[in-house]
Amino acid sequence: MYQHVSAATGTDMTFSVYVPEHDGGAKLPVVWYLSGLTCTHANVTENGEVRRLCAALSLIFVAPDTSPHGEGVADGAAGAYDFGLGAVFLIVHPTYERFEAELDLVCEYRPSIVITALGSPRRVLDRIHGYGGSVFSDVVTPEQARKAAAAGADGLILVASGAGGHTGHYSPFALVEEVRSFWDGPLILGGAIGSARAIGAALDLGADFAYMGTHFIAAPESLVVDDNREMLVRASMSDIVTTPAVTGVASNWIRESLDRAGFTPEILEVKKKIDFSNLHGDAKAWKNIWGAGHSVGTTRSIRTVATIVDELVDDFREANFGRSISRWIS
Image (tube, rainbow, N blue to C red; front, side, top):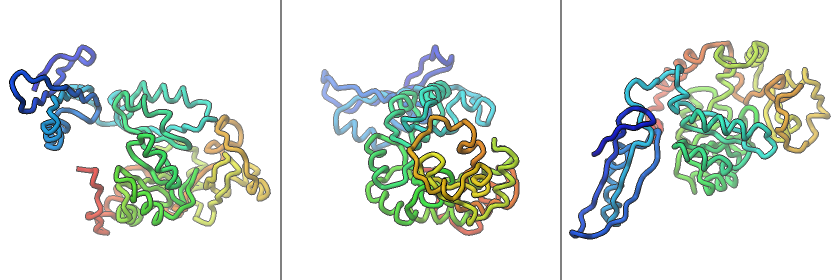
């Protein structure tokens, strides 16, 4: 183990060097493991598999902590983005005109996880991996999952039928089963998950995590307007309309908001070209046309995120889903 002072952070930087047994005078190749944020000598070099592999290949292994922060790193909302906590969502479709500017911001604030949607994660991989972040890719078909995996995504998010906003059309039962036949990495399942029972079912299907959106939109912490919150509380599954008429991609919207925006049944049947170049104009998605998934009926009141989470945790424990806890959580 070695230490030196990091000029960038003003803290000690720790790194380890593993040297396998070798003949005197032999020259061995050196592998530098340059990662960061979550990877240090403690969880890389001290992993027996790494040392065993290096011993077998006669490699010297150097593992520095490339993101030393010292003590007192914020673990709450205050200052979180300065230290790579949290995750962000990034549209990567070629028509999205704010992509470059948003990617620059992502790389400035360095969140731990970047979620890509509506396109290949390949557009962001080099820059996100460059600072030590991970890329999880939204996919709606097994073909998209294969492409994202081949591109180098760190995790897959399967968007199944019933998801709010841009949605999938495959059953979660079949989608997870098929993707698990070729992907053993982190897998998140989304689509109509609005209860602890649904979370447990997702994990039992083979997902590592459950993706919930609609259940939290009505919370006071959400940035939506109060009218959206109240509409969510009023809505039930039968009030959700699936149509590509808004963005060109099949999406689930609340019927009441579509009616207000002037989307007649005839307009809803129109198939338009995919276009995310002006999502923030008049009568646009998420400004005054509001999405929700098939689980909208579980949103019966406006409650804080803490209240919602506490209820989910209590219900999960009561349902005895402990056997399903993700293998990625220690």
